Amino acid sequence: MIQTLEVALGERSYPIHIGCDLFSRADLLLPYINRRKVVVLSNTTVAPLYLGMLRSTLEKAGIAVLPIVLPDGEAYKTLASLNKIFDALLGAHCERNTTLIALGGGVIGDMGGFAAACYQRGMPFIQVPTTLLAMVDSSVGGKTAVNHPLGKNMIGAFYQPKLVLADIASLDTLPDRELRAGLAEVIKYGLIRDPEFFAWLEINLENLLARDRGALAYAVHRSCANKAAVVAADERETGERALLNLGHTFGHAIETGLGYGEWLHGEAVAAGTMIACELSRSLGWLTQDQLLRIKALFVRGGLPVAGPKLGAQRYLELMRHDKKVQDGRLRLVLQKGIGSAELSDVASDAQIACAIDNACT
Image (cartoon, rainbow, N blue to C red; front, side):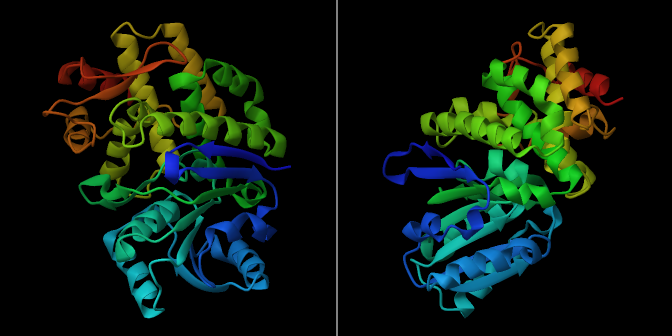
């Protein structure tokens, strides 16, 4: 069974199809392919698993496939890798209306989307996420970017896909660590706007870890429904969409401070969320019992609940590069109970530093 959601953005609206064994469904892809040639961007981990299957489906429908396979890992989410994509597109004489399909996790999706936004000032692209984190977060909403040594996702563009195709069956091959990392973004939706979903996760977390396809499909659908609603209301992150960055300001500091790839993005977000929750508790916005309830869910998910000891001042230095900094002030997504969050600049550097010290033991 396929479940379909729509990201409602007027003329740029697009569907999210969620189901199993979708790589064989040419009928889902062909309406978004304008020419008889497509580019499929993937990496050295995902390509051996799924590129052949997707390629066969497209070629049977008369579509020639140009594969571009990059090394796997956050360390390769760079301008240099982006240039390799452009080299391949130019070398194959790809046109503005050639469709680019991003087959992989968040790194491939982000780079594929950014390349598509830039190549000849915009080519159509399709997101085919193969990790839980990409299915519930990075493939939806049109944020595309590469990393810079001074900050994560600092160079990019808003560019929406034509389609998101989330094949739950591809999660069968996802390493356990990657699955757990994806749960951090799933839990986020319960924390910021969906307390009923948070309660469902408390009951069903072990089913997700056991890769129960029904539970995974429900979690992906519910997460995407939450994100689609936020993106439709605030596509370019001028208000409500910033709440989707719960834990990310601290998490990005962890990723940058340790070196990209040392911690997975979801792991850094989990620890970053706990720092944000500790700060929320210290401000009186979150009770101790609520803090412990949130921590318990992350622990059950096998996720880190304490950040690395980079030192509070190093965290603050790295966080100054965050995109939510305004007029030199750090704006952080903080919890106001479970199911409600707020973007706020009320915390002083001293209060933030204290929360970091308390949550990085």
